[in-house]
Length: 97
Image (tube, rainbow, N blue to C red; front, top):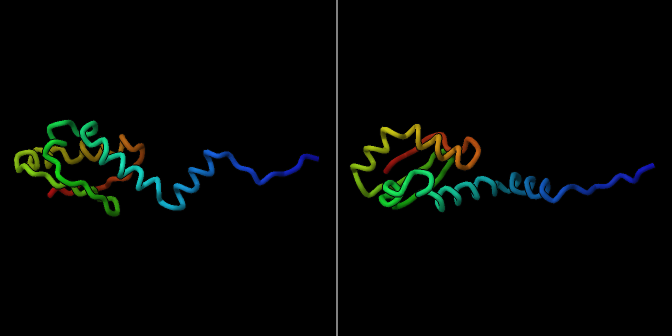
């Protein structure tokens, strides 16, 4: 008879820890902030002054009214790009300041 073990794979343990501690969400927000120019392009990134996240909302501060206006038209596209980048439905709303 085979001995039953309580061992689990390291990758599974790390995934479980990330979910329990909500680290996967924190890591995703870090990745968005870090790679913002790759996600939205250099022009928008150059005018972005702050990025914050709370409960499905991504708050982005923009220092140019022209860029902010262009982003208003592209809100859905930006949300899709961000969610695709992190590989899950994290952002439900984009709030521009």
